[in-house]
Amino acid sequence: MRPSIRGWALAVAFLIPAAAAGHHAFSAEFDANLPIEVTGTVTRVEWINPHAWVHVRMDQEDGSTEDWMLEAGTPNTLLRRGLTRTILTAGTEVVVRGYQSKDQVCNPMCWGSGRDITFPDGTRLFMGSSGTGAPRDGADPTEPARDGETNLPD
Image (cartoon, rainbow, N blue to C red; front, top):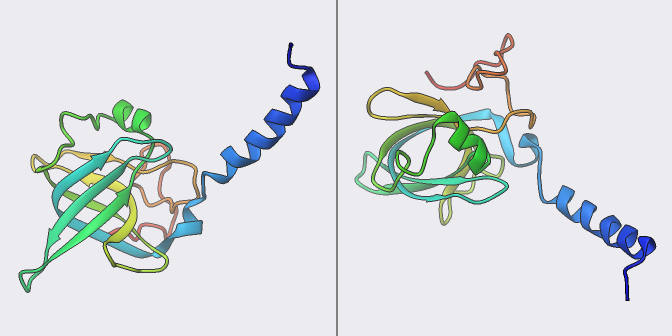
């Protein structure tokens, strides 16, 4: 029994909307008016599609810690930018600039969209996703900042 063209067309018709719904625009989850700077230790990196996730534990002034889950670009994009599994590992001290989630919920952890990541040697790499509606804040070397959109912490 060979699948018919009509059968294939129906299968594709059901699969394409499901795949498209799995991805989102920046503004659907993150707030360009809530810039963040997370300084701490990488606790875990999830190299999964469509976005990698970098987990960072940040020490607070009162001695407590705050855990952040920061969305990054696709694993393939990160690798092409130089963010590899050998330099982005648990235990690495980093500074991540980006934007907080719209809901600002930090229970059980805070979450945001990372734009760039800085390592102890001063190396700064873009870790965000291009073309998703994120602010043109100068973090993405392929998208120069527009006037009024340089609101990331320096």
